[in-house]
Amino acid sequence: MKKIKYIIIMLVVLSSAAIIMPGCMKLQKDFTRSTTDTLDAHLNKTAWAYLKSRAYQNATPSDTLFRRMYDAIIYSGIDTNEYIKPNRTYLFLNQAAAKAVWAGVFTSANKAGTSWKSYPAADVKNYLQYLILQGQYTHYNLPVYDVVANTLLAPGTYATNPVNFKFNFTSAPFIPNPTSTMTIKVLNASPSNTSDYPIQLNGSMNVNTSDLLATNGVVDVMSVAVNPNLPQ
Image (tube, one colour):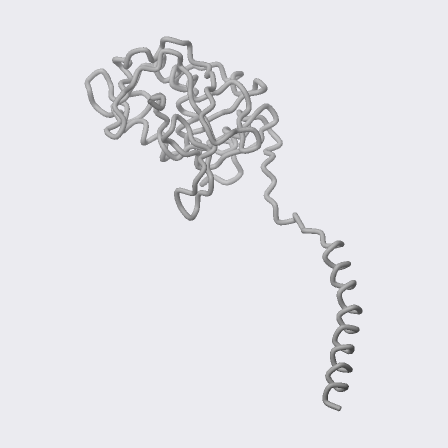
């Protein structure tokens, strides 16, 4: 008698499973992940317009993220049309990064700068040209190994350390960069709980905010000074 009851119970369980499983499979097959929480990286403006909108020409007076970068551009005399040309990657210095440049780049008097005007305009222009890469580099097309990118800076400019714009970062003594190139890759690691697989420049500098899509290229925001030393 107990054996018959056991068989009946097993048949009921199997029958229930046969009814329930197709429904579960259908739910799994029809599942669609919502992407409404995905941030839109499109700026819907040129790199130059975006920089200006967060320097002086903005609706929020406190938004001055790129004010010192803008000051460098105006002081140096670099052609601002360079920031509206297509197929480029632009490295924008935020306020902290600009201060880091002044602290780590010495004047002809062998002292840290206090503003862009501490250096000749021509040297500031050269540095800004180094911050513009030819080609668009993002997480979508970069590997986890170094890719050599050409910059707008003329080859030979950093073959020696400039006398009036002397790179003097204590953690990274100057290394000649006669080709004026930069290496770029996606770091195959998470250096902190707020930075997962960042884009890395010259083997040591992580991009703070990457893959901002201007109408004419890519904008990456730096919170550290960009050093022209290539990985050795």
